Amino acid sequence: MSRTARVERITKETKVLVEIDLDGTGVAEISTGVGFYDHMLHQIARHGGFDLTVQTVGDLEIDAHHTMEDTALALGAAFDQALGDKAGIRRYGSATVPMDEVLVRAAVDLSGRPYVVHDEPPLAPYIGPVYPTSMTRHIWESFGQAARITLHVDVLRAARPGGHPDAHHVVEAQFKAVSRALREATAVDPRAAGAIPSTKGAL
Image (cartoon, rainbow, N blue to C red; front, side, top):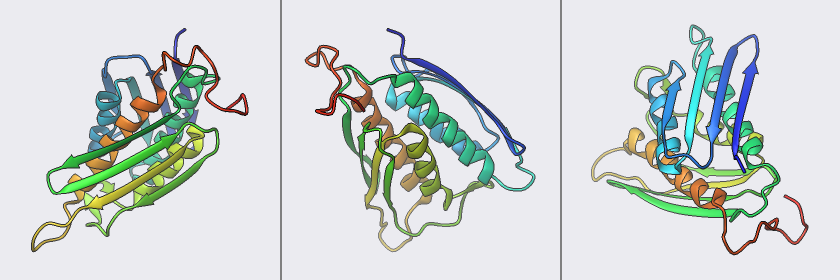
């Protein structure tokens, strides 16, 4: 069974196209106009093992908020659509990812119940010229809501001796950890025999 999705989201502020194959090989074509965000979405494809296309045109002349938010919403909707009734999947996934001085833990439940917990230290306001670090929490909230998942992202360690946390490392480790957790949760469980992984019979 194909686990693919195509989602288009068009508003007065943005035009977003997302295509995903959950059983891909990590191939990605990403263009949002926000360079560091593109880099992070490539992490989702590569470390999640998903084939992913994201094309976003947004009102960057205002700021990056709408572009990043609407992309996250469309990406979450694509995950939800590609998972279908979620029969036969593992459902739960977690990963702890180090990136130099940073250590991040992510846990996901493809529960059908949107709930996001996000904890990170104060960071420099921007990574590169356009990516506001305050948006990382909102990306996870928007993604989790549209994907209908429970998601916990915790930065366990970030301090550098004698210096502030490296925002690039803190955010990138989050995307890598979430990607690995999603890879595990969306994987087909050979022991499940196609059953819905819930005593309720639905997710």
